[in-house]
Length: 330
Image (cartoon, rainbow, N blue to C red):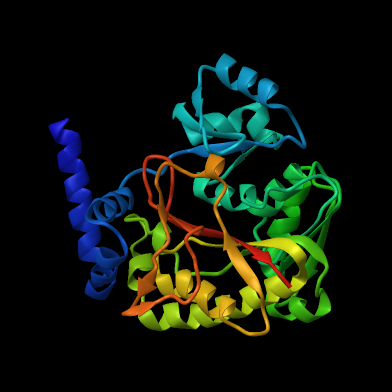
């Protein structure tokens, strides 16, 4: 026990040496002391192997039967439907099985899966994944829809679309239309078209820092956070214009920065041209490391009620994430 604690403490110290002082100062404000320590320690620890069952190719029963017969051990994630954590075995062991080779499973961070689950999809819906590549969440959405309805997957990068198409084919999706272009333009070309929109925006990635990738720490800057926040605001505005009245938009990032999370929500909801509200996050989908959103930042109290949005703290299963569900009112 003492050795494990010493390793965690050493990991914390290593991460603090890599992070710019300004980033550390901000994280100590955003997070409680306990969550700050847990987050930084997680950046130095091995990532958990988490996967979901792809119901477009197999069933939970068949997947678990093969895994258990191979000697690997997994445990289900209570708040993450179809999500499992590998307890005994390696990622190579898992990928070597039939279920790994033939797309019966998909290795994906549990926090990332939360955004797609928060869409609460039903068969026959019209859905937009605005920033879709490389396709992890897109294929998850298609499975939730059971390949019914219409799922539009958009991304601005032609290069990333090749990987998107590969993943969609491997996961056996048949209801997806792929588009290439800026997500911001869809607010005009696809206004009032969708029941649900997922806008998992490009972000500074503070929740996914890893000690074995020090370049990520060096890239951290307030200039980049502010630049991304402007793009994120434009994407969220477009998403709310794409969704039908009464429809829902899920906005997500993998960063802690309030400028990219609560501040974006507050600015967009304060616009006179948009009427929407943040809904309570589905209780059955709440990770055990979920925290309520901030009510103020930078000395300013937010004008809108953002209570339903959640910030996910990294732990033995989760990575850092932010998710909110918005409903368009008119």
